[in-house]
Length: 377
Image (cartoon, rainbow, N blue to C red; front, side, top):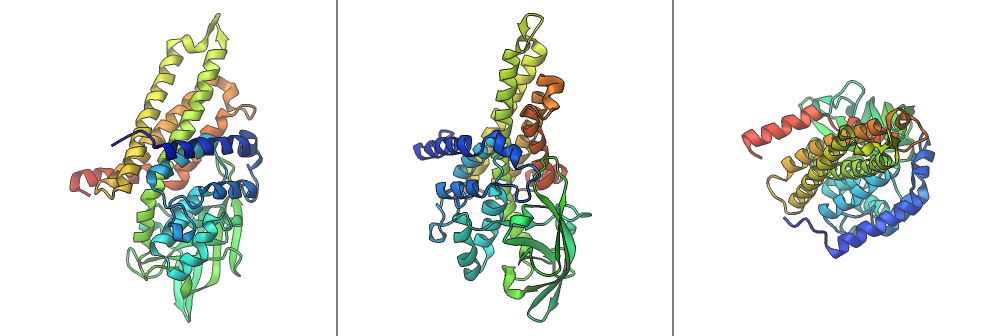
């Protein structure tokens, strides 16, 4: 495995960092806290113009047709900037599901719009009393003439108020994995959105469905195939999030390291004391290892290797821990002031925690890794 970026990947990284520095500084991140949409539309359009929103989509659908290593490069930069745009929700998950299992009509309608930054789509999968497993999907989709009738609720749905469609995981039969994915209009009769609190103060919604009518043509894929599609795209999510955690942790560590050099106590910079220096060194080591695993997982996904899923899960676990340790270390290095809104490290701490809560149960990911190592892929 070659860990060196190609010239094109280096150019992509540098151009994206310049864009985010200019268009998505920390001031914009702060402005988007508690905002109904949660992102600046102009920033979404700017990312689309650079190709980020359609990065891995086929060129025939307006995308760039790039691979998972390019995706990792992009998400590391998004994590560094805490970029408040639903790239993960729309471009990785929603677009990935439609590209993988959607009909020709669904692909033609939504994929070019996603790539152009003209449509936000977001998944609705978690439920208030559910888990990240298939058994957690309990929202009922009862067959009716021409489609389905939905009753139930979804929790922690990101960017629901801005979405054109919710990719809603529903239970359509009695079997353990009788699950479908439906394209649901959040403005349809019977759909209620209620803003919920989150660590990151980003737009998360409780979405309640009361006798919501959905056409059969809104189903993505064959009947009962929803969980298999969601699981497959979930490993792309792990690769993207792994890189995001690395970027978030690396930028937080830069802030903590700069403070440790500037803050003087007992006539010495506090970074010269072993109690702080060793913590910073450990955080750096963890980030470096996490970056290697994230890139290896992306490389394996691009090559269709049999261990790609396990590597994606391992990268997610390692990068989540690296981000958790680095952001906690940043808070401790700055002391009490680090927890105030006046400084930026608290933004990285809160968002790293939020991404972990919203997207995975670490115990379940660990179970998957252990099972794949014992029983094989």
